[in-house]
Structures are given as structure tokens and as C-alpha cells.
Image (cartoon, rainbow, N blue to C red; front, side, top):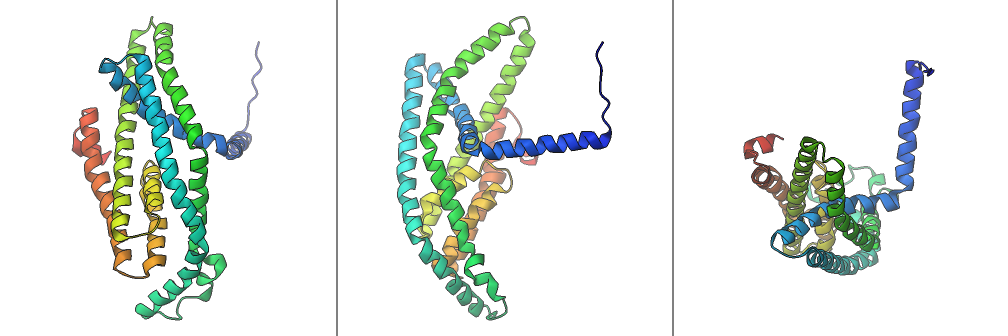
Length: 295
């Protein structure tokens, strides 16, 4: 005979709250491992699709895995070298950028006739918005540090994906409907991640080329940041735009270049998010673009 403990609602709420707090603290403590692992899961789905495509073209498994692994390593080397050089330049220029922000803010106030209206603490060193660039520098440096760990995770996951699927098919061979349903869900998720990743690459490229044309410093960093944050629904592109707009303001002040940066980000987000993504996802999932736009 089993004994059950009846918990009152306050006790249940307290236990749930304690559990949520424990999970948050555990995730914070494991952030150095959890972040690269989650990125690796995302990219492994993308490169698994590449592996399947190569195998459908007649390549043996070992050759397809070799091409995927080589593509990963070369991509990591290229991104790492470009970002490292730009981040080093950003780090060396941070003191100058922080010193220039109050001057540009004062110049902007004078242009629009608000000189002396804004309170002085907003341009004090402690409240300098240019400090945001420190957080971007730290985050991107951590990404570079964990890049090859992500590559290792992705290669391992891609190699194990086919074996795991075969084992699951063998384990649930008596339930073919469940296996087919799981395969359908997996294929849908994979198609979505592939479409989202390719469009994120497009967003990052468009941001990079736009900032290069406008001559905004550290365009490579802002392009990679736009690529990464484009996976965050709704608010990701907005967050990605803030450091680039801040850099343009520090560099040019309240000028046409600043307006061009804001316009470029706005146009890229609207075109990719509202037009290209619904059409691409509609073709990949047999969903009408109008329904995809609402979803």
C-alpha cells in the first residue's frame, strides 16, 4: 500500500518556486558549457541536413562526414580569424569610443536645440551607453573561445545522429505509426532550422555589407551578432541593431549616416522577416505564404 502526501496549494507553489530558482541557478552555473552546447545542437541540425543531402547524391557515409567536418573546421577558422582581428581592434578603441560619446551627445543636443535640457548624469562615465560595447566584446570573445568546442560537439552529434535514428527505428519497430510520426516531426524541425539558419546568414551578410558601405566601424562584429540574434524571435534583430546604431552615433553623431544605419536595419528586418521568410518556409513546409506570415 502506497502512502500519498497531500500538499496544500501554498506548499506546492513554494516547491515549484524553489525548483524554478534551482534550475535558473544551475543554468547560470553551467552557462559556459550550456551556451556552446545549445549552439551546437542548432548547427548540428543544419549540418545533418547537409550530410543527408550529400548521401542522397551518392557519396558514402565516411566521405559525407569528412566533407561536413572539413566544412565546419574551415568555417570556424574563417569566422574566428575575422572576428578575432575585429574584436582586438574594438578592444583597443573602446576608451576612445567612450570618450567620444558625451561629445557627440552634446553636439546632437546643440543641433536640435536641447543643449542643457538633458540631465548631466546621462553623460557621466557610469551612465555612458558606450559601456554596452564592453558586454558585446565580452560575449563575442566568449563565442570565439568556445567556437572549436562547438565544432567538436557538432561533429560528434552529426556522426551519432544516423546511428541514433537506426536504434530508435529498431526499438520501436512494433509501432510503425509512432516511428513515422517522429520522423515527420524531426523532418519539420530540421527544415525550419535550415530555413531559419540560411535566412540568418542572409541577415548577417546584408547587415555587414550595409555597414561597410556606410563606413561604420567593426562591421564584421555587427554582422555576426545580427546572424546570432536573428534566431531570437521578435526582439533579436532589435537587440542586434543597438550596438551598431550606437557605434554609428559615436562615429558620426546625429548625421545622415546614423539615419542610414537605422534605415538599413529596419529594411532588412522587414524584408527578410515579413516577405522572404514566409515565402521560404511556405515552400519548405507546403504551407501557403499567407498562413506562414500570420504564424
